[in-house]
Image 1 (cartoon, rainbow, N blue to C red):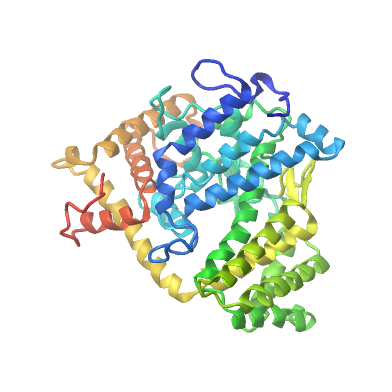
Image 2: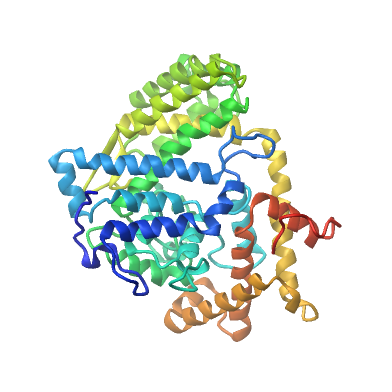
Length: 514
């Protein structure tokens, strides 16, 4: 298989431990296999993607099926670079290459760190980690992914981490910074901050790819890519990120359509309402838009896009995208109610294929990308298409009150687990009976914080955290509790929460393991 030659030292193939040498392609395939055979990968089949999977059978994606589709899209994009123009191939080579197997491995791994209950679980676990467990950098799914690959999982070569090549480890760093490093940087306007940092960088980045105890590992990995600028993804990571965006914006619409969540009348009213009254809506102030009427939510979304991404936002392109989504989704797919029959299945398959092919065909490669973009991005028009498709997700699925009620209960599950396990670890009469895996994790995490204190004591000063032995132990316990909860499936989280809170008497339920 043809691979672009790498220009950096070690070809991105350096592992932390020496293993028998193989060819470059075979070496990356070892990484793919280690990820796919990981129990963290297997558990994704029972973790929510966007909406709960319980009772939905095969019609709703989970984190595993989503990851497999991201892998397919990412590999297709990387392979396509072989037939690109000479200019694109030159840029790809200069930036370190784009191996299809590397992007396939990164795509398979990119969601390993997601906790139970999808993005809701991520938000709640972050809040609990910071406010109840006192972890300065809280929880973040991407940082947890990097931690799993480099510290929590294991293989035959090492008891800590999967010993992956630097190319693959770098390719999962979607947000290549820590949460805390932004607190020390001068304030910048939102449009000058990388995507994912958030509007209030002074309080720390919203999205980040490494915790402080894993920051040195991240820096070492990125050092193998000297052509990649600070706070930029590697080319292979950028391909994975774009593939994730494509899969999320298109494949998740399959779920919502098949599950009967997307209804023609409501979606049509919003999109057509904006198209008909665009000029009138543009004259309204923000308080008037807060009143939910047809077109108001879409106008508010467009204003947010303009504010954050003026580098690419274009009024005509946005309107073209609204018209395209209205024509193909609303007046096309949604006019055929999903009944499980062949006609409906063919309709959704054709819709998915058209949009995937369209978005994959719009890929652009840039040597000097905008701070809010990556070396690989969508064309201006396709970028707006994804914005509108994601708006449909948010407005008609994530904002539903019935989903919110369900998520309120899931929040309580995460809180009960965190409180229960942390209290258990600090119960002198019973701490020794805590789950063996949790106790091992406490020991390992505590040692990581001790090393951090020796090698980077400025972290503790910047975070306002003490450095005494008791405080180091507390940090180790807290991080171990978060690592432990994040490894649960949805069903495990619910089941264990009922046990640890004393609301269940079903001790020996089949399949439960701590």
